[in-house]
Length: 184
Image (tube, rainbow, N blue to C red; front, side):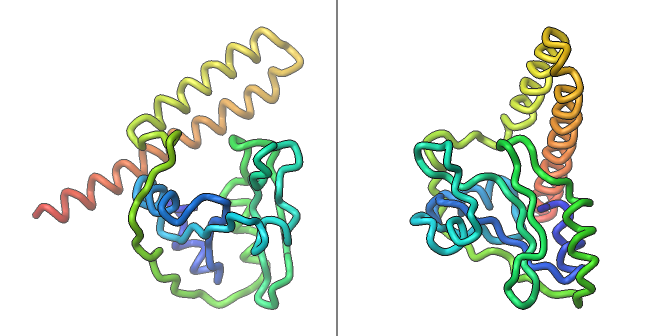
């Protein structure tokens, strides 16, 4: 969503991510991924996670399930897609198509407020994301070739990892260009 944030706001959408992480962890994620939208903290799950029934009942920590929820201007849920795991997410096109059907006016969304970055203990550095996705891709290929009944799902996951790697490369270029522009 970060790479296509302007398309969301042009379609009238305010974009935000919500999970249980602390504001410091969110500041680190915003900085690492150069996000153009805020990440909101719901540590006790009372603001959005529980009200939208997104707590993961299988997770002993009661984390939120990965989901995309579109809320209409009246505050009602217009669409949702809850993913099985952290790798599976709706495409930007899928979500944008839903927002565009709402026929909203374009908005201006201010950038996220700056905070003091406090990466979590298991936070992966940005520079490692492409290698991580490549590893996931090749592990899935191996699994798909060993387990024929998983071949179709492995191919879909393989394509998803390609998309993620393309996004990491694009974000790296944006960050490099901004850095080069700032040093001039």
